[in-house]
Length: 259
Image 1 (tube, helix red, strand yellow):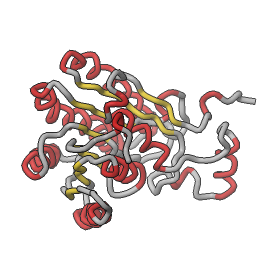
Image 2 (image 1 turned 180 degrees about the horizontal axis):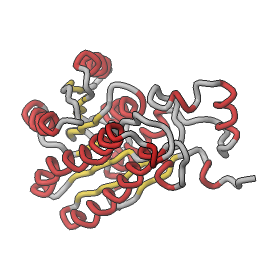
Image 3 (image 1 turned 90 degrees about the vertical axis):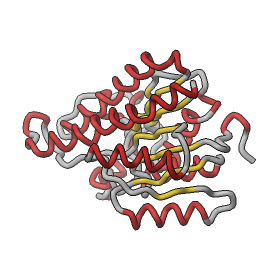
Image 4 (image 1 turned 45 degrees about the horizontal axis):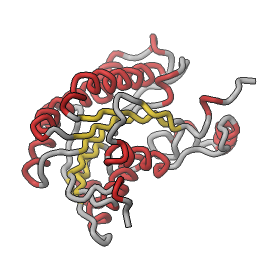
């Protein structure tokens, strides 16, 4: 039984990049809390599979709507189809992101720069622009943007990705300031290394994984469910008086001494 503070019964949650990893874990957590969840990523078959998985659970309610959020028209269609098939968006989770280039910021190829900006920043702005008017009309809504621990420290090799994730933390603050009067809460989550396919290059070498884990207070890498719990807090009544924050969920990495 879900505690009433975390109950999402009757709420519509749109989660981008929700066919695997962190996005899927958030979608599953929301569905278990009673939400009507829209599963979205580029590939329709992947969306269908995750929606079927959720709908097979007792009380599960999921609708697959494929979209490529690097395309403005697809973003607009995603929101309009969500409203048509499921209802107005009560909770938006901007999780989908790309990292096509790893290396020093100034060496970023132009095409990688443009793609990372388009997906990690522009799409979030456009998604928020599409759902905020409805939230204003209802005087209620929650937006969660998945950032990264890379937003808070300099990085030699995460370059443009870290820049975009830092920008996401400012989007959170700007929107929280602008729309708090409408009872719209906007928050972010900044994970460290979570064991997903997206981050696999950072831990696929077992020795490197051990080294990373040693740098965390909890001595392990994150799991997708570790992030889903924070997203459930921000999307539910439990987080009703929290806005403009980006919560670092990093197993204690950021508080460890650099010896």
